[in-house]
Length: 119
Image (tube, rainbow, N blue to C red; front, side):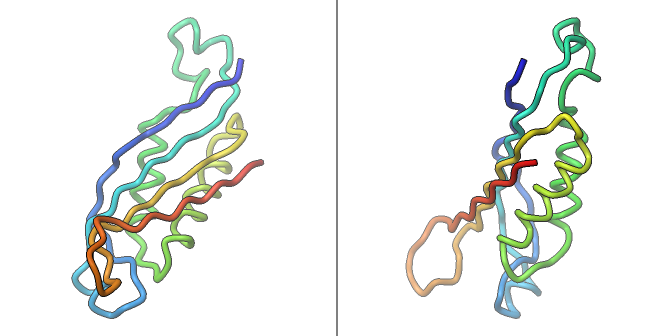
């Protein structure tokens, strides 16, 4: 049976951005990750091995968010790629990364990049 496992509203203080001040002082980011998967029968018998372990999924996101990058696209791609490598039952991954108060010269609550990757 197919389904999805998602983590929504993950918050990080990270150092992503093109400008030097973004990479030195950092900013608040929000990450949503959704994994399309094939649930194994064991998942329906209360066995964690039959599904995506979202504690491990969080660890992937946290590790990649800790690596400073200029572009959110780079971070999203790294999270998606590592998720597909780490969970062989994952069929597709959608990553949404938002940067709060981006430096665009005007009022903007957050800028968001979405990355989708399939096996």
